[in-house]
Length: 361
Image 1: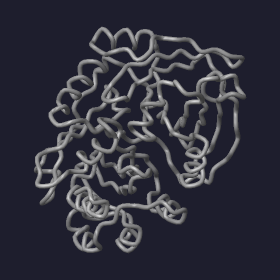
Image 2 (image 1 turned 60 degrees about the vertical axis):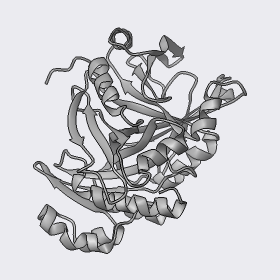
Image 3 (image 1 turned 90 degrees about the vertical axis):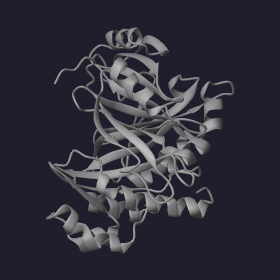
Image 4 (image 1 turned 180 degrees about the vertical axis):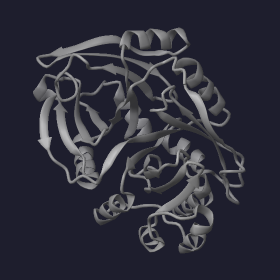
């Protein structure tokens, strides 16, 4: 497979929050993330405070402005807490930035070198949909916990088995999906992995369109959704209204033992979408033999689907903030490379039931 824009992996996801300290505590207690590094006034950072949370190869960086006038302040006012940066680790930041800009990307910030006693980190950023950016990061000459002006913390969490970021889903406006698909193809050398239209993803009331983009080496996967015509307001329309425009809709995190992960999260109070128990009546007919018992899956509300490569287990949270915007997916892949197409109808009906309770359907 040719790779015209080498990306090592997802480096981290940066959230801007109204109160990063409280948000970090929530992810630490519910998801079991370790809080491994901190930046703020105590470390010489006069602009923003931030907390790095780690589990497996998943890194979330939660940050808040420290003073009025910070550029993130108005963004938080529009979006609430939101994903600002889906950052990629690359071999050569300057080459990546120069190539992306030459191919049509709008710069977010020019290449910079951050330095402290742990060494140097090179970074640059480009803009993508909404207020989301992609930073390019290289810390080959750095031995610190995350970035310069961070001090190590060692607040261990009770981990739930998270391994890596499986995919990150973006919502864009009507008729903008193909624009951003082409942007990822042209700028970052991504390719089209899968397409879902309103025949695949629809109910009696709402529908959406989705295309899944992946990096040249397949390590980064980014579905992009747009609304489709329906009788009532779709989940994408609802997201765009309450988020104030395009943005990251959900983050899928991989685990090797999804029943264990979900059992732990439910015990800690995390709320999930629920499908009717009748969903499990036809699971074996749809997916054939699996290693898990139907009793366990039904007890935990886990969804199952199969493709030519194997099967997957997945479950989606309810929105994790007051606004009906950002949520998480937890996924276990047993060979499957797909995204649960067989679960779309049941999933969307569950989302619509939540929309009806909110009065936004």
